[in-house]
Length: 345
Ligand SMILES: [Zn+2]
Image: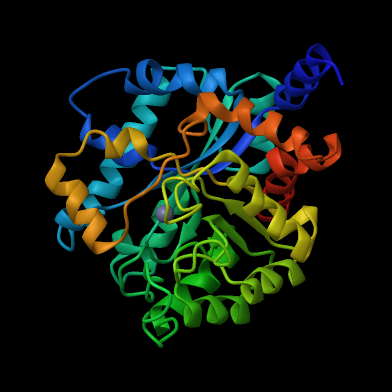
């Protein structure tokens, strides 16, 4: 194939927009709340360059705000999302599959508000309804730490809590499904993972993870778990920051190895992207905070040519080089997530 025809193929595949199911946008908007037009000036150029069409933008509460300010910071993060989106009409906050379709028809970038860790709810299930009304449409019960809902998978090959979900956590899963909030199994510990699947009747998602075969930590997903997601017609988004514990192995090719591994186990309908681009936050931190992350969790290894949304075309090119058909690439880039949105939202 000539270089020109590859470029055309990349452009055509990207033209429909890419769905990225995990982006830590809201904590950054919150930390920059004294500034205006952060979304437009700091994020829009890269998002447009990568032709990203739908982004799951997560509420996340850092340890220093917990427990007392968790709810307030979560609400403030949503407030920033609304204010910043109003100031930049290239974006649309979407609450349904129909909203997403409408936004895409108008060439807008659809934002789906998600929550990473149920800490903002405390132990009050009634608050879920409030977050639903504000537009939250996907919840992962925990980050790496434990909370009222359950326990996170740790950044080691064993040692997570043997406990699954709490009673509150089980109630939360049921209520999410009843309301129409996608339940996300990213980060949950192995016992909690099994618990969630025993409750859910709709297709499960893992918004951003990597396969344990290549990076064996409980925060990532085992072959057995991948098959459990596949059996339920779920979708797994591949994360760009935990591709390997080693810097030299954190490459775009190895990112595609993760995609390929999942596709080999459960088929092409079960794999998508959840880039979790994080360098923009990490690079703002003082050395002490980077050291703390490295000690508590891990040192994220950023893939040189997949560091932010503007690099999405590099992934499309790599998928073509690796022999994926156009139909397969489209499923990875958007079709699989859109099927989940149609089912849940
Ligand atoms: Zn995460």
